[in-house]
Length: 125
Image (cartoon, rainbow, N blue to C red):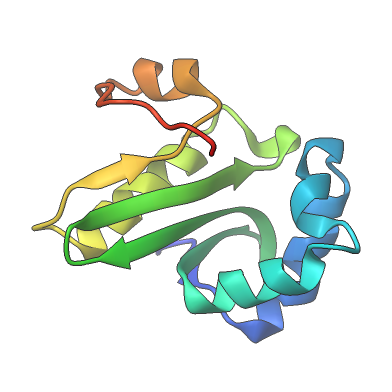
């Protein structure tokens, strides 16, 4: 049985609470950005990973005709190293088998360990 579910509004409070426990996620959960983030979760292709009915991770992707762009991939520290992030990435690829999937990353070593190849880079204007 799959533990991955399409994100919907009822997941909001649990996911936000999980991310608020991580200081590195303040740019998403802070008072100036939280409403935009909530809207982005709903307007993007977002999946949550649940263990025993509790969210332990999520993936948010931007989808268009040219590719799938993973914007965020998160697994809570207590659930890391169990393959849940890899499963979320597999799910987005399964949903779009004929499209390339790209990841916006600040955790390059993680993706390199999974065997993904680097294609280009990203710059902030």
